[in-house]
Length: 369
Ligand code: SF4
Image 1 (cartoon, helix red, strand yellow):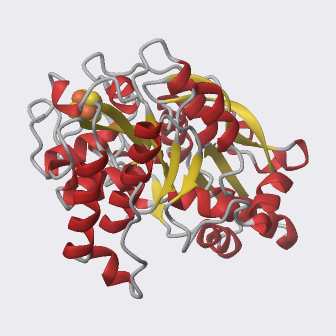
Image 2: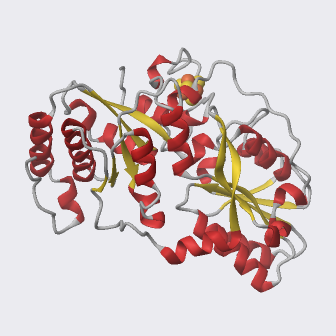
Image 3: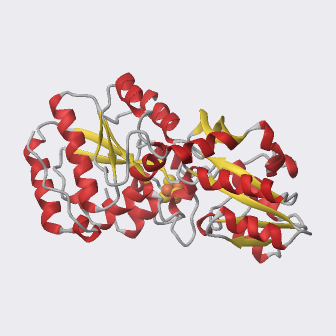
């Protein structure tokens, strides 16, 4: 297999058109068969669309888009629990901003705020801890969404609240994990994924030691991939290289941020506070051990119990095919509501809301296939 061009010295070098073109030429040279690859992460989906990379690859390569958008996969019942908790009189509900527009069964967090609920946007769970400290008469809840990337900060917030003796802070646990989702996608009878671009930021925290057994079990090569154009084309190049050679392995195309072991301090923080639990992914269903729930010692920080919000029943829009989109079975443009009943201004499903959602990417960058 030919060698790729060398490592650029500055971040801007990862957008250098000549370097990107050179790797794309190499991809054309080594591609003989048709291949379907999935990029897990919604951030990668947006970068691929933004820079038009999907239109530069050989026609024999199809990229489909995975469930790696935390806003998109947060289960409807969790959104409804968030809405219910945020409506309680004594609550300040805190969240990252992109969750406020995500539709639940009866509205979204913006509509709760418009009707008088105290919903605040924060940039970190530690901001929520500070709000709890400053408002001892209020219950302060943080919506703890995200993949493994946000879990260490969520764990840190719980530990800090415990250290400060805060009785009025809790989280709504909603973290999800990538490896169980890979298992779910690859074991599905409808699966057509032959190679994975693994999400570089998740691997920066978790490493990629969990991936070789999955690659081996499903005979699917994986490449840890970053988010700039040169990172992405290198990820595709390495994946196609393995597929064409009939080789199954896990390779790292993002070594400036990712090691095999990952950030072990962050991993031990997660394990100190959370434990794996079954989690419902919006549009996909329950994936065993695919989420982080609070360990028994920290159950007092679980807003689900504190507000008795665990039994809320939900109803998803019948038009939305987000589950199939998030598993790479269908493209957003195959949804009958795409661009008509469902737009970023009036979204029916979460993938049209989030900046990382595949439907929003297709809409923003005007993809028709
Ligand atoms: S276009 Fe809208 S309705 Fe269709 S799958 Fe995407 S989010 Fe759901």
